[in-house]
Length: 222
Image (cartoon, rainbow, N blue to C red):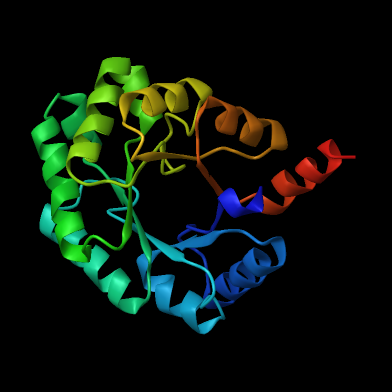
């Protein structure tokens, strides 16, 4: 189960020592990847993350950055050692129905990092579902897919509207084709939360409470 987890630390107050501990925990827990802020990619690399993919967030958490800024942030993160990019769309563009703008953001980042980098696109599913509805979530996911995303991802975990939900994962999984995977992230703090997201169709989990979630899986196996 750990092989499905991006062990994550994105708090603004995270220090170099915090990232070093994150790397150590990811190794101990056998998490698949480490997800950090762009400025912490080189820190994670120096802290011994060479054997695990490092994911960097881009346009985080608002998504209100210019396309060119997101693209350059992604390029610099990859240059520092990131193998995966988790970018935030312009959520307001999706709310207003401008999915051309959503796709343009994704296209710019994809062009900046190349085809070999795993690109995850954060759509803030809770916002779209609460303000507009499922159709907007479907359209955002399809725009991301058309622009070259490898994953669609539920949430930053920083928006007051909330994080991942079972319904969001179900809608997102149905919206995209088999080439595109679904990452559930934001507010997944228990084993039951994780199981429900996987059952709904998630293929990757973004967790900060990785240890407690995995400890719960061990209990289920007893």
